[in-house]
Length: 122
Image (cartoon, rainbow, N blue to C red; front, side):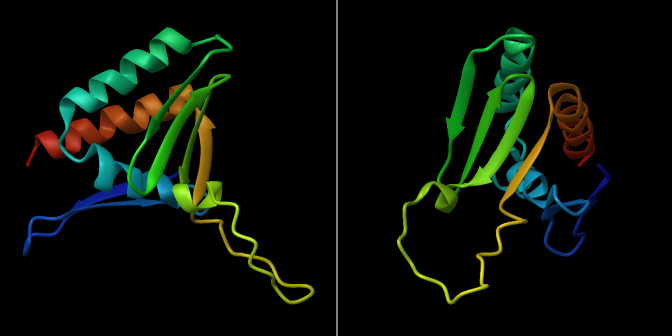
């Protein structure tokens, strides 16, 4: 999983660009974690507490949900939980590749540490 963090010098906004299949992780960092160090501490604490555990911890946000379970981190858009009965034409599928990402606890902890270091600099 490759990623890059950037800060827009004009408006001060942060951007987290992730490799294909992990894009929503960047969205979670920018929109949810931001500069909320207490939230980052809570997530890191949960990562440690749940390592090699079968328990689940979930943080549901307005648009994104973070789930920690079975040594995997799942970030997904909340609309994926909806039971919308929208019918698509044959051979058509909803595109949700940028709406869900899965990675291991260690990888996510490294990303969160890198994000914290990045936003602390500014």
